[in-house]
Image (cartoon, rainbow, N blue to C red):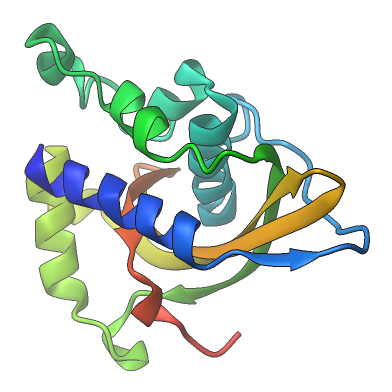
Length: 178
């Protein structure tokens, strides 16, 4: 729970400190649905961000393995509400744009075995069934008055049993060559 709360605080900090305004029209990707959220690392990352800012609880929980938060919710905690409450930037959510991704591999300078262990432990999944891990870079757009405001976010995703899921937000120093 503490790890998730830190992710929430991190997202709030990123969203509040790294906005850049622009007045020209922007290109956003089509919205993600529950039916296509698991198809790619980009979809699950975009679906997660979209769910938080559009307050779509069904899409939010679809970004995680089924049942992951059941016990926490039974205890009276609601991760969805926590994310929504701390990430409202005061702007109207406009959409997301997939920018790039890096495979989370040792060849790319990441400690893949440790990340696999962490995902397996915190998401209660079989480490051997995690086939891929990616860091996805997204640009998130909002509208303030008539101007677009954007921020880049990084999301760690993983493929488990042929479906993609979100693991956590990554801080902005995860930047990589796109």
